[in-house]
Image (cartoon, rainbow over all chains, first blue to last red; front, top):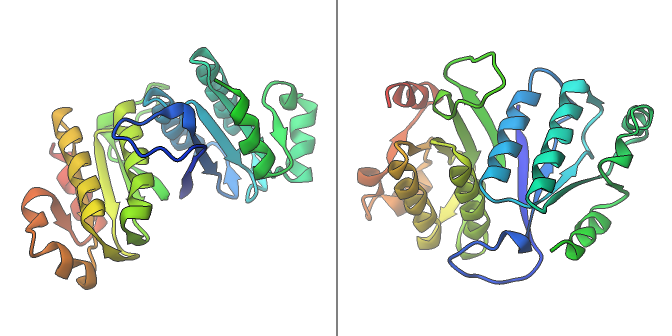
Length: 127
Length: 124
């Protein structure tokens, strides 16, 4: 299952050392996030966070199905990131998926934005 | 970057066994001064996080310059310090003519098929 990763730079500093406070890792999830690929998603997110990533933005634009294992990965990543002063946010959530998030009140734990611009902007306040 | 994971061995516990899978990263369009920086950050963060086996799939790559090659070499050095390695997969002719003169193939292994890549990583 392919996953797409983009690096968004908040400030343009080209140094040899990577300053993770200025970087947002954008992860575009595939159509389906279920038990078959949530382990891989966890590998990516856990590894990026252990590697230093502090700001992760999950784009759910393509997602039309997510199960409990996928949601578990997002929650675990949020917990990991908040331990090291980072955070995870989501955007472009379809109405169907939103209704799933609503029942379990996920939006109270992980902030959901309407657009990528808002999501990226939210990170400029985290130090 | 588009990326996926190939498991060499299936583990059924919750821990992540970094020696048991290969991360494939697709290099698309061009790897030059502008785009190589993002690949460098992505690879370095993955390696810093524990990944040891990386395959860069060059099927869709049109052009690579010295900064792109630099990113691959830097990743190779980092990975080998941790007992891992990086390989190139499906290097197209148009890219071969660029990397051949600098003998990149002597430093980083190149394979044509995914099976060869899996085989290689099974034994390191």
